[in-house]
Amino acid sequence: MKDCNQCGKCCIKYGGGDLNVSQEEVDLWELFNPDIFAFVKNYQIWHDPKTGEKLTQCPFLTITPQNNPHAVNKYTCSIYLDRPEDCRHYPSLISEMVTDECEMIEISDLENYKKAQKKLDNLMQDSRKV
Ligand code: SF4
Ligand code: SF4
Image (cartoon, rainbow, N blue to C red; front, side, top):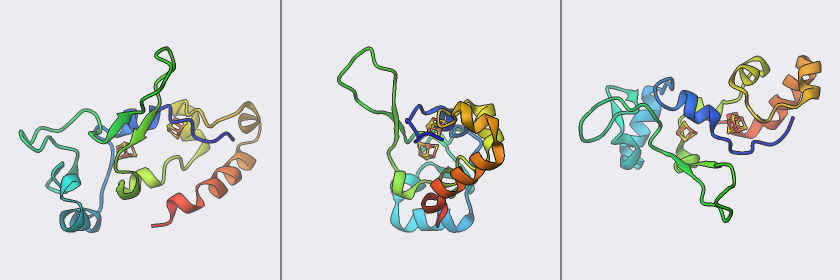
């Protein structure tokens, strides 16, 4: 299992319309992060604050500037510390990572899913804590 290389595939795939938030998360954003709350409509994320339209991409996914113009894009979450709990839990399953072509996966992980899942669970321990 490799470290996350910020390829952005997960945020590109799920950040547009497949993220869930709890009422509690939204209420906290409303109080402490109005810039995030602006993109919430009826407890659903993410919506354009001006038009109310549902967005097809997460508005907080940004391309990390790099020195080499030919380098592969790397992505950053601009609300990393306040990101939705759903995002904190990804990746959660090896099978899901394989389907999503997550670049943390190594050949050895494919040879033993159970062992790989243990490694992943250890790696994600802190991130999954609320
Ligand atoms: S909030 Fe952050 S972690 Fe979640 S989809 Fe958007 S960029 Fe990715
Ligand atoms: S798909 Fe995997 S390697 Fe790519 S950003 Fe998401 S967690 Fe990191």
